[in-house]
Length: 507
Image 1 (cartoon, rainbow, N blue to C red):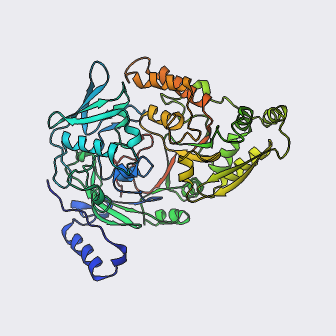
Image 2: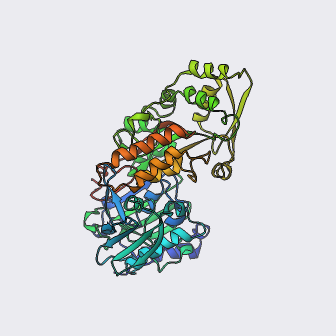
Image 3: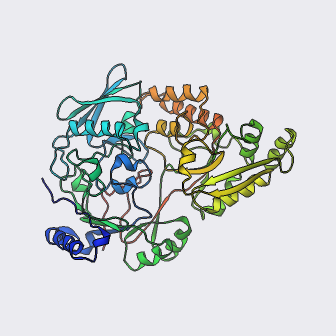
Protein backbone atom coordinates (compact mmCIF):
# COMPACT_ATOMS: atom_id res chain seq x y z
CA UNK A 1 0.00 0.00 0.00
CA UNK A 2 1.49 3.33 -1.03
CA UNK A 3 0.95 6.30 1.26
CA UNK A 4 1.29 10.06 1.10
CA UNK A 5 4.90 11.15 1.69
CA UNK A 6 5.64 13.01 4.90
CA UNK A 7 5.90 16.77 4.75
CA UNK A 8 8.76 18.69 6.32
CA UNK A 9 7.60 22.11 7.48
CA UNK A 10 10.32 24.75 7.69
CA UNK A 11 9.67 26.79 10.84
CA UNK A 12 11.05 29.87 9.12
CA UNK A 13 8.10 29.72 6.74
CA UNK A 14 5.59 28.54 9.32
CA UNK A 15 3.58 31.80 9.29
CA UNK A 16 4.14 32.47 5.63
CA UNK A 17 2.00 31.44 2.67
CA UNK A 18 4.23 28.53 1.65
CA UNK A 19 4.46 27.03 5.18
CA UNK A 20 0.74 27.43 5.82
CA UNK A 21 -0.09 25.98 2.45
CA UNK A 22 1.96 22.89 3.18
CA UNK A 23 0.06 22.31 6.40
CA UNK A 24 -3.33 22.93 4.84
CA UNK A 25 -2.63 20.57 1.95
CA UNK A 26 -1.54 17.85 4.33
CA UNK A 27 -4.56 18.35 6.56
CA UNK A 28 -6.89 18.05 3.63
CA UNK A 29 -5.41 14.69 2.67
CA UNK A 30 -4.99 13.14 6.12
CA UNK A 31 -7.64 11.71 8.45
CA UNK A 32 -8.80 13.81 11.35
CA UNK A 33 -6.97 13.38 14.63
CA UNK A 34 -8.11 10.13 16.11
CA UNK A 35 -8.29 8.28 12.79
CA UNK A 36 -11.42 6.55 11.54
CA UNK A 37 -13.32 7.11 14.77
CA UNK A 38 -12.67 10.84 14.58
CA UNK A 39 -12.32 11.08 18.38
CA UNK A 40 -9.54 12.71 20.34
CA UNK A 41 -9.18 9.58 22.47
CA UNK A 42 -7.14 7.87 19.74
CA UNK A 43 -4.57 10.70 19.42
CA UNK A 44 -1.55 10.37 21.69
CA UNK A 45 0.15 13.65 22.62
CA UNK A 46 3.69 12.97 23.80
CA UNK A 47 6.05 15.55 25.31
CA UNK A 48 9.60 14.27 24.83
CA UNK A 49 12.65 15.56 26.64
CA UNK A 50 14.72 16.08 23.51
CA UNK A 51 14.53 15.40 19.80
CA UNK A 52 16.67 12.89 17.89
CA UNK A 53 20.03 13.96 16.48
CA UNK A 54 18.76 12.64 13.18
CA UNK A 55 15.79 10.72 11.81
CA UNK A 56 18.26 8.46 10.03
CA UNK A 57 18.89 5.57 12.48
CA UNK A 58 22.41 5.15 11.09
CA UNK A 59 23.30 8.69 12.15
CA UNK A 60 21.15 8.85 15.30
CA UNK A 61 22.80 5.81 16.88
CA UNK A 62 21.68 4.12 20.06
CA UNK A 63 20.94 7.06 22.36
CA UNK A 64 17.53 7.02 24.07
CA UNK A 65 15.95 8.96 21.19
CA UNK A 66 15.94 5.74 19.18
CA UNK A 67 12.59 5.20 20.94
CA UNK A 68 11.18 8.12 18.98
CA UNK A 69 12.56 6.70 15.74
CA UNK A 70 10.86 3.39 16.55
CA UNK A 71 7.53 5.09 15.86
CA UNK A 72 8.63 5.19 12.20
CA UNK A 73 10.96 2.23 11.81
CA UNK A 74 10.69 -1.48 12.56
CA UNK A 75 13.77 -3.48 13.55
CA UNK A 76 15.09 -6.83 12.45
CA UNK A 77 14.65 -8.32 15.94
CA UNK A 78 13.07 -7.35 19.29
CA UNK A 79 13.57 -8.26 22.95
CA UNK A 80 11.03 -9.25 25.61
CA UNK A 81 10.65 -8.17 29.25
CA UNK A 82 13.66 -10.29 30.24
CA UNK A 83 15.89 -8.96 27.47
CA UNK A 84 15.60 -12.22 25.50
CA UNK A 85 15.73 -11.86 21.72
CA UNK A 86 12.43 -12.24 19.85
CA UNK A 87 11.32 -12.08 16.19
CA UNK A 88 10.83 -8.69 14.58
CA UNK A 89 10.90 -8.11 10.84
CA UNK A 90 12.80 -11.39 10.83
CA UNK A 91 10.57 -14.24 11.98
CA UNK A 92 13.54 -16.60 12.49
CA UNK A 93 17.29 -17.03 11.97
CA UNK A 94 19.87 -19.77 11.87
CA UNK A 95 23.66 -20.03 12.12
CA UNK A 96 25.86 -22.27 10.03
CA UNK A 97 27.73 -25.05 11.81
CA UNK A 98 30.90 -22.99 12.22
CA UNK A 99 29.04 -20.01 13.73
CA UNK A 100 30.53 -17.59 11.19
CA UNK A 101 27.41 -17.03 9.10
CA UNK A 102 23.81 -16.32 10.10
CA UNK A 103 20.76 -16.16 7.85
CA UNK A 104 17.70 -14.13 8.82
CA UNK A 105 14.33 -15.17 7.37
CA UNK A 106 12.04 -12.17 6.89
CA UNK A 107 8.27 -12.20 7.14
CA UNK A 108 6.41 -12.41 3.84
CA UNK A 109 4.85 -9.32 2.31
CA UNK A 110 6.66 -6.62 4.31
CA UNK A 111 6.45 -3.13 2.82
CA UNK A 112 7.72 0.37 3.68
CA UNK A 113 5.22 3.21 3.97
CA UNK A 114 6.36 4.57 0.59
CA UNK A 115 5.30 1.29 -1.05
CA UNK A 116 8.83 -0.06 -1.48
CA UNK A 117 9.13 -3.78 -0.61
CA UNK A 118 10.96 -4.49 2.63
CA UNK A 119 12.87 -7.47 1.35
CA UNK A 120 16.24 -9.09 2.00
CA UNK A 121 17.93 -6.71 -0.44
CA UNK A 122 16.66 -3.72 1.57
CA UNK A 123 17.94 -5.21 4.83
CA UNK A 124 21.33 -6.02 3.31
CA UNK A 125 21.58 -2.49 1.89
CA UNK A 126 20.82 -0.99 5.32
CA UNK A 127 23.47 -3.09 7.10
CA UNK A 128 26.12 -2.27 4.50
CA UNK A 129 25.23 1.43 4.68
CA UNK A 130 25.43 1.34 8.48
CA UNK A 131 28.90 -0.22 8.20
CA UNK A 132 30.24 2.10 5.53
CA UNK A 133 28.52 5.48 5.76
CA UNK A 134 31.04 8.14 6.80
CA UNK A 135 28.87 9.63 9.56
CA UNK A 136 27.50 6.29 10.82
CA UNK A 137 27.09 6.23 14.59
CA UNK A 138 26.72 2.45 14.65
CA UNK A 139 29.56 1.26 12.39
CA UNK A 140 31.56 0.31 15.47
CA UNK A 141 28.77 -2.02 16.56
CA UNK A 142 28.93 -3.99 13.32
CA UNK A 143 32.58 -5.07 13.25
CA UNK A 144 31.58 -8.75 13.49
CA UNK A 145 29.74 -8.46 10.17
CA UNK A 146 31.91 -8.74 7.04
CA UNK A 147 29.16 -8.77 4.43
CA UNK A 148 25.40 -8.91 3.93
CA UNK A 149 23.75 -10.46 0.86
CA UNK A 150 20.21 -11.33 -0.18
CA UNK A 151 19.91 -15.05 -0.95
CA UNK A 152 16.23 -14.64 -1.84
CA UNK A 153 13.47 -12.08 -1.35
CA UNK A 154 13.12 -13.08 2.29
CA UNK A 155 16.55 -14.48 3.24
CA UNK A 156 19.45 -12.19 4.12
CA UNK A 157 22.76 -13.87 4.93
CA UNK A 158 25.44 -12.22 7.04
CA UNK A 159 29.04 -13.38 6.77
CA UNK A 160 30.88 -12.79 10.05
CA UNK A 161 34.48 -11.87 10.84
CA UNK A 162 34.41 -14.07 13.93
CA UNK A 163 32.11 -16.48 15.75
CA UNK A 164 29.48 -14.18 17.23
CA UNK A 165 26.20 -15.50 18.59
CA UNK A 166 25.18 -12.00 19.73
CA UNK A 167 24.14 -10.94 16.21
CA UNK A 168 20.38 -11.56 16.70
CA UNK A 169 20.47 -9.38 19.85
CA UNK A 170 22.69 -6.81 18.18
CA UNK A 171 20.30 -6.24 15.27
CA UNK A 172 17.48 -4.91 17.42
CA UNK A 173 16.05 -1.43 17.79
CA UNK A 174 19.26 0.37 18.64
CA UNK A 175 21.15 -0.80 15.56
CA UNK A 176 18.82 -2.26 12.93
CA UNK A 177 15.83 0.05 12.41
CA UNK A 178 15.47 -0.57 8.69
CA UNK A 179 15.08 2.41 6.34
CA UNK A 180 13.54 2.48 2.87
CA UNK A 181 16.26 2.13 0.21
CA UNK A 182 14.19 4.35 -2.07
CA UNK A 183 14.97 7.36 0.16
CA UNK A 184 18.48 8.78 0.01
CA UNK A 185 20.19 8.93 3.42
CA UNK A 186 20.38 12.73 3.29
CA UNK A 187 16.59 12.87 2.82
CA UNK A 188 15.70 10.69 5.79
CA UNK A 189 15.90 13.51 8.32
CA UNK A 190 13.40 15.55 6.32
CA UNK A 191 11.24 12.63 5.23
CA UNK A 192 11.82 9.49 7.33
CA UNK A 193 10.36 6.37 5.70
CA UNK A 194 10.26 3.02 7.48
CA UNK A 195 7.90 0.13 8.16
CA UNK A 196 7.10 0.83 11.81
CA UNK A 197 3.74 1.29 13.54
CA UNK A 198 3.30 4.88 12.29
CA UNK A 199 4.18 7.05 9.30
CA UNK A 200 5.24 10.69 9.44
CA UNK A 201 2.79 13.23 8.00
CA UNK A 202 4.37 16.43 9.33
CA UNK A 203 7.79 17.21 10.74
CA UNK A 204 8.80 20.63 12.09
CA UNK A 205 12.44 20.67 13.26
CA UNK A 206 12.92 21.81 16.87
CA UNK A 207 9.14 21.68 17.42
CA UNK A 208 7.15 18.53 16.64
CA UNK A 209 6.40 15.57 14.45
CA UNK A 210 2.93 14.21 13.70
CA UNK A 211 2.39 10.60 12.71
CA UNK A 212 -0.52 8.38 11.71
CA UNK A 213 -1.05 4.66 12.15
CA UNK A 214 0.57 2.48 9.49
CA UNK A 215 -1.95 -0.18 8.39
CA UNK A 216 0.87 -2.21 6.79
CA UNK A 217 2.89 -2.59 10.00
CA UNK A 218 3.34 -6.31 10.65
CA UNK A 219 1.64 -5.95 14.07
CA UNK A 220 -0.90 -3.34 13.01
CA UNK A 221 -3.76 -5.20 14.67
CA UNK A 222 -2.06 -4.51 18.05
CA UNK A 223 -1.71 -0.75 17.48
CA UNK A 224 -4.80 0.97 18.91
CA UNK A 225 -3.51 4.56 18.70
CA UNK A 226 -4.42 6.22 15.41
CA UNK A 227 -2.28 9.34 15.65
CA UNK A 228 0.80 10.49 17.58
CA UNK A 229 1.68 14.15 18.12
CA UNK A 230 5.23 14.25 19.45
CA UNK A 231 6.56 17.57 20.74
CA UNK A 232 9.96 18.74 22.01
CA UNK A 233 11.33 21.65 23.96
CA UNK A 234 8.79 21.68 26.78
CA UNK A 235 10.16 23.05 30.07
CA UNK A 236 10.38 20.31 32.70
CA UNK A 237 8.77 22.60 35.28
CA UNK A 238 5.60 22.89 33.20
CA UNK A 239 5.15 19.19 32.38
CA UNK A 240 3.01 18.33 35.38
CA UNK A 241 0.47 21.10 34.79
CA UNK A 242 0.42 20.36 31.04
CA UNK A 243 -0.41 16.72 31.74
CA UNK A 244 -3.00 17.63 34.37
CA UNK A 245 -4.83 19.94 31.98
CA UNK A 246 -4.77 17.45 29.12
CA UNK A 247 -2.31 19.27 26.86
CA UNK A 248 -0.29 16.03 26.82
CA UNK A 249 -1.08 12.40 27.59
CA UNK A 250 2.47 11.11 28.03
CA UNK A 251 5.82 12.67 28.92
CA UNK A 252 9.41 11.80 29.68
CA UNK A 253 9.83 13.19 33.18
CA UNK A 254 12.96 13.98 35.22
CA UNK A 255 13.26 12.47 38.68
CA UNK A 256 12.95 15.95 40.21
CA UNK A 257 9.40 16.25 38.82
CA UNK A 258 8.22 12.70 39.51
CA UNK A 259 7.00 13.25 43.07
CA UNK A 260 5.08 16.37 42.02
CA UNK A 261 3.47 14.34 39.22
CA UNK A 262 2.41 11.64 41.67
CA UNK A 263 1.02 14.26 44.07
CA UNK A 264 -0.99 15.70 41.18
CA UNK A 265 -2.66 12.34 40.62
CA UNK A 266 -0.76 11.43 37.47
CA UNK A 267 0.42 7.91 36.75
CA UNK A 268 4.22 7.88 37.13
CA UNK A 269 5.68 4.82 35.45
CA UNK A 270 9.05 3.50 36.57
CA UNK A 271 10.16 1.84 33.36
CA UNK A 272 12.91 -0.80 33.47
CA UNK A 273 16.17 -0.19 31.67
CA UNK A 274 19.88 -0.76 31.49
CA UNK A 275 20.77 2.78 32.61
CA UNK A 276 24.03 3.30 34.48
CA UNK A 277 26.02 6.42 35.36
CA UNK A 278 29.74 6.31 35.93
CA UNK A 279 32.82 8.27 36.86
CA UNK A 280 35.00 7.86 33.78
CA UNK A 281 38.62 7.54 34.90
CA UNK A 282 41.59 7.39 32.54
CA UNK A 283 44.10 5.00 34.06
CA UNK A 284 46.80 6.16 31.63
CA UNK A 285 46.67 9.81 32.76
CA UNK A 286 48.03 11.51 35.88
CA UNK A 287 47.18 10.96 38.70
CA UNK A 288 45.30 7.74 37.98
CA UNK A 289 48.23 6.07 36.24
CA UNK A 290 49.28 5.24 39.80
CA UNK A 291 47.13 2.18 40.70
CA UNK A 292 47.10 3.30 44.36
CA UNK A 293 45.37 6.57 43.43
CA UNK A 294 42.84 4.69 41.29
CA UNK A 295 42.08 2.30 44.14
CA UNK A 296 41.68 5.19 46.57
CA UNK A 297 39.26 6.89 44.18
CA UNK A 298 37.19 3.71 44.07
CA UNK A 299 36.84 3.64 47.88
CA UNK A 300 36.12 7.40 47.97
CA UNK A 301 32.82 7.19 46.07
CA UNK A 302 29.72 7.07 48.28
CA UNK A 303 27.13 5.71 45.84
CA UNK A 304 24.29 5.89 48.34
CA UNK A 305 24.85 9.62 48.80
CA UNK A 306 24.63 10.07 45.03
CA UNK A 307 21.36 8.14 44.98
CA UNK A 308 19.91 10.05 47.93
CA UNK A 309 20.98 13.43 46.57
CA UNK A 310 20.23 13.04 42.89
CA UNK A 311 17.51 10.48 42.22
CA UNK A 312 14.69 11.51 44.59
CA UNK A 313 14.16 7.94 45.72
CA UNK A 314 13.98 6.36 42.25
CA UNK A 315 17.61 5.33 41.75
CA UNK A 316 19.91 2.68 43.16
CA UNK A 317 23.67 2.31 43.70
CA UNK A 318 25.46 0.21 41.10
CA UNK A 319 28.98 -1.07 40.53
CA UNK A 320 28.35 -2.48 37.04
CA UNK A 321 26.47 -1.63 33.83
CA UNK A 322 23.60 -4.11 34.35
CA UNK A 323 20.65 -4.25 36.78
CA UNK A 324 20.30 -7.07 39.28
CA UNK A 325 18.26 -9.93 37.85
CA UNK A 326 19.48 -9.45 34.28
CA UNK A 327 21.41 -12.33 32.72
CA UNK A 328 24.69 -10.35 32.57
CA UNK A 329 24.57 -9.05 36.17
CA UNK A 330 27.41 -10.51 38.23
CA UNK A 331 27.14 -11.10 41.97
CA UNK A 332 30.94 -11.25 42.09
CA UNK A 333 31.20 -7.48 41.53
CA UNK A 334 28.07 -6.36 43.37
CA UNK A 335 30.14 -3.97 45.52
CA UNK A 336 33.86 -4.74 45.12
CA UNK A 337 35.00 -1.35 46.51
CA UNK A 338 32.49 -0.36 49.22
CA UNK A 339 32.59 3.26 50.33
CA UNK A 340 35.40 3.68 52.85
CA UNK A 341 36.91 7.17 53.02
CA UNK A 342 39.31 6.14 55.79
CA UNK A 343 40.67 3.32 53.65
CA UNK A 344 41.11 5.71 50.72
CA UNK A 345 43.06 8.19 52.85
CA UNK A 346 45.24 5.41 54.27
CA UNK A 347 46.11 4.21 50.76
CA UNK A 348 47.18 7.69 49.65
CA UNK A 349 49.11 8.45 52.83
CA UNK A 350 50.85 5.06 52.64
CA UNK A 351 51.95 5.87 49.09
CA UNK A 352 53.45 9.15 50.25
CA UNK A 353 50.81 11.56 49.00
CA UNK A 354 50.15 14.57 51.19
CA UNK A 355 47.69 17.48 51.11
CA UNK A 356 47.75 19.26 47.76
CA UNK A 357 49.81 16.58 46.00
CA UNK A 358 46.94 15.23 43.91
CA UNK A 359 44.93 17.47 41.59
CA UNK A 360 42.82 16.62 38.55
CA UNK A 361 40.36 18.36 36.25
CA UNK A 362 36.88 16.90 35.87
CA UNK A 363 35.78 17.82 32.33
CA UNK A 364 32.05 17.46 31.69
CA UNK A 365 29.48 18.43 29.08
CA UNK A 366 26.95 20.15 31.37
CA UNK A 367 26.76 21.60 34.85
CA UNK A 368 25.02 18.93 36.97
CA UNK A 369 24.66 18.45 40.76
CA UNK A 370 26.41 15.06 40.61
CA UNK A 371 29.69 16.73 39.64
CA UNK A 372 29.84 18.75 42.84
CA UNK A 373 29.04 15.66 44.91
CA UNK A 374 31.84 13.71 43.22
CA UNK A 375 34.19 16.67 43.62
CA UNK A 376 33.49 16.77 47.35
CA UNK A 377 33.80 13.01 47.86
CA UNK A 378 37.18 12.81 46.10
CA UNK A 379 38.39 15.96 47.84
CA UNK A 380 37.54 14.46 51.23
CA UNK A 381 40.19 11.76 50.74
CA UNK A 382 42.88 14.02 49.27
CA UNK A 383 42.18 14.14 45.51
CA UNK A 384 41.53 17.79 44.64
CA UNK A 385 39.10 18.12 41.73
CA UNK A 386 38.36 21.22 39.65
CA UNK A 387 35.31 21.15 37.38
CA UNK A 388 35.35 22.47 33.80
CA UNK A 389 32.21 22.49 31.65
CA UNK A 390 33.08 22.09 27.98
CA UNK A 391 30.25 22.05 25.40
CA UNK A 392 32.69 20.29 23.04
CA UNK A 393 33.53 17.71 25.71
CA UNK A 394 32.71 14.82 23.37
CA UNK A 395 35.80 15.32 21.21
CA UNK A 396 38.42 14.95 23.96
CA UNK A 397 36.30 12.32 25.74
CA UNK A 398 36.03 9.96 22.77
CA UNK A 399 39.59 10.84 21.83
CA UNK A 400 40.73 9.42 25.23
CA UNK A 401 42.39 12.76 26.08
CA UNK A 402 40.70 13.44 29.44
CA UNK A 403 41.83 12.20 32.84
CA UNK A 404 38.40 12.39 34.49
CA UNK A 405 34.83 12.81 33.27
CA UNK A 406 31.34 11.37 33.74
CA UNK A 407 29.05 9.40 31.49
CA UNK A 408 25.61 7.80 31.54
CA UNK A 409 24.40 5.03 29.26
CA UNK A 410 21.09 3.36 28.49
CA UNK A 411 22.65 0.01 27.59
CA UNK A 412 22.15 -2.21 24.56
CA UNK A 413 20.04 -5.22 23.63
CA UNK A 414 23.29 -7.19 23.32
CA UNK A 415 25.07 -7.44 26.68
CA UNK A 416 28.35 -8.25 24.92
CA UNK A 417 27.98 -5.02 22.96
CA UNK A 418 27.49 -3.17 26.26
CA UNK A 419 30.58 -4.82 27.74
CA UNK A 420 32.82 -4.03 24.78
CA UNK A 421 31.59 -0.42 24.72
CA UNK A 422 32.58 0.02 28.39
CA UNK A 423 35.62 -2.22 28.70
CA UNK A 424 36.94 -3.06 25.22
CA UNK A 425 40.16 -1.58 23.82
CA UNK A 426 38.24 0.38 21.21
CA UNK A 427 35.21 0.82 23.44
CA UNK A 428 33.95 4.40 23.10
CA UNK A 429 33.13 4.53 26.83
CA UNK A 430 36.49 3.16 28.00
CA UNK A 431 38.31 6.42 28.70
CA UNK A 432 41.64 4.63 29.18
CA UNK A 433 41.46 2.79 25.86
CA UNK A 434 43.07 -0.21 27.54
CA UNK A 435 41.58 -3.69 27.94
CA UNK A 436 43.02 -6.46 30.10
CA UNK A 437 43.80 -9.90 28.65
CA UNK A 438 41.44 -11.31 31.32
CA UNK A 439 38.53 -9.27 30.02
CA UNK A 440 39.30 -9.88 26.34
CA UNK A 441 39.38 -13.65 26.87
CA UNK A 442 36.17 -13.63 28.93
CA UNK A 443 34.18 -11.45 26.54
CA UNK A 444 35.33 -13.49 23.55
CA UNK A 445 34.06 -16.67 25.23
CA UNK A 446 30.72 -14.97 25.94
CA UNK A 447 30.48 -13.83 22.32
CA UNK A 448 31.12 -17.34 21.05
CA UNK A 449 28.53 -18.94 23.33
CA UNK A 450 25.09 -19.60 21.74
CA UNK A 451 22.29 -17.71 23.46
CA UNK A 452 20.47 -20.94 24.32
CA UNK A 453 23.55 -22.66 25.77
CA UNK A 454 23.37 -23.53 29.49
CA UNK A 455 26.86 -21.96 29.78
CA UNK A 456 25.74 -18.58 28.44
CA UNK A 457 24.76 -16.88 31.75
CA UNK A 458 27.95 -17.91 33.57
CA UNK A 459 30.21 -16.94 30.67
CA UNK A 460 28.49 -13.57 30.34
CA UNK A 461 28.70 -12.83 34.06
CA UNK A 462 32.39 -13.76 34.09
CA UNK A 463 33.00 -11.16 31.35
CA UNK A 464 31.12 -8.53 33.38
CA UNK A 465 33.20 -9.29 36.47
CA UNK A 466 36.46 -9.17 34.50
CA UNK A 467 35.56 -5.81 32.96
CA UNK A 468 34.62 -4.19 36.28
CA UNK A 469 37.71 -5.50 38.07
CA UNK A 470 40.30 -4.61 35.45
CA UNK A 471 39.07 -1.36 33.91
CA UNK A 472 39.33 2.07 35.53
CA UNK A 473 35.68 3.07 35.02
CA UNK A 474 33.85 3.54 38.35
CA UNK A 475 30.09 2.91 38.10
CA UNK A 476 28.05 5.00 40.51
CA UNK A 477 24.25 4.80 40.30
CA UNK A 478 21.37 3.80 38.08
CA UNK A 479 18.13 5.68 37.47
CA UNK A 480 15.22 4.00 35.63
CA UNK A 481 13.35 5.72 32.84
CA UNK A 482 10.48 7.74 34.31
CA UNK A 483 7.30 8.61 32.44
CA UNK A 484 4.17 10.41 33.55
CA UNK A 485 0.91 9.63 31.81
CA UNK A 486 -2.77 10.47 31.94
CA UNK A 487 -5.56 8.34 30.50
CA UNK A 488 -3.12 5.87 28.96
CA UNK A 489 -2.97 2.14 29.64
CA UNK A 490 0.26 0.49 30.81
CA UNK A 491 3.13 0.17 28.38
CA UNK A 492 4.90 -3.17 27.80
CA UNK A 493 7.78 -3.40 30.28
CA UNK A 494 10.57 -3.91 27.75
CA UNK A 495 13.87 -2.74 29.29
CA UNK A 496 14.97 0.59 27.88
CA UNK A 497 12.37 0.57 25.10
CA UNK A 498 8.99 2.23 24.54
CA UNK A 499 6.51 -0.08 22.80
CA UNK A 500 2.99 0.90 21.71
CA UNK A 501 1.62 -2.56 20.95
CA UNK A 502 -1.53 -3.17 23.00
CA UNK A 503 -1.53 0.35 24.48
CA UNK A 504 -4.84 2.23 24.54
CA UNK A 505 -5.90 5.77 25.29
CA UNK A 506 -8.71 5.61 27.80
CA UNK A 507 -11.57 8.10 27.88
